Length: 304
Image (cartoon, rainbow, N blue to C red; front, side, top):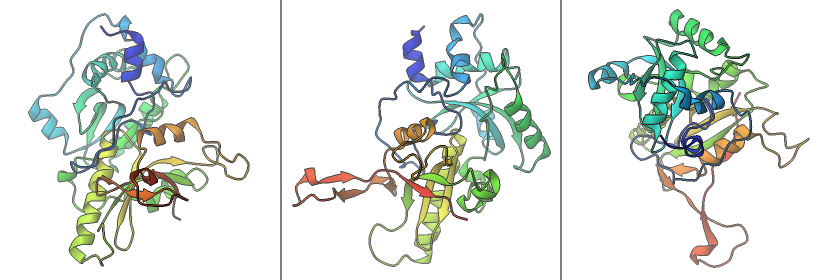
């Protein structure tokens, strides 16, 4: 069994925000980065997962290919998501804890795009009363006085099973869903649209919108709080919901919360159709390579 420090670097400590590297439509790729140890008590589930050495009996809990295909057509609740080279082993150990000490015997493992998730339930729609009841139950569960699953997320089916847009993932609805005071900012990580200055055709716009929605769906299924936003000719993808406690340029300029810093670490770039955007460094002169950089992801306001 790999040692505790290796496992800590392999497991993600955040639920919902910053869970995995970006991926969308087979080309939404980010460079691999070293993931530093998160600040203490980032989530109560960190210790919960790191106690895997105490597991007394192995459990697989995986799904057959047919079961996975069937499950992909339903909404489900992501309790925890794991990425990295050891995600399968880590998720298996996590499932044991979720089923036993976590009190969720119905939890199961599912391999998604970039993550292996511990999931729960299969629902026809996000409005299914069972889905809302189960989500509230899981978020409110207590283990040793804490709520380790407080950031559990209701996630949509795989993109191929979805028809049209999803209002639950539309950034324009974020304030209504999360509250005006809490939903002030989000991190833009991708743009879909033409890469030149030519006017986008109706076919271009439709393709861009589908790509952005698929990207948001895939990130959600991997456990990230992702959104899409459709502009006139381009569509954007963002991750996370942040408020004044995360970023306050007036009272705490230059200070960002651990959650926002983790999101930036997981998504360092703003990508155009899955590719880095080359931009000139402000003040640099000449066309030498060192005068250019890849555009970073950026904090943007959540629309009304």
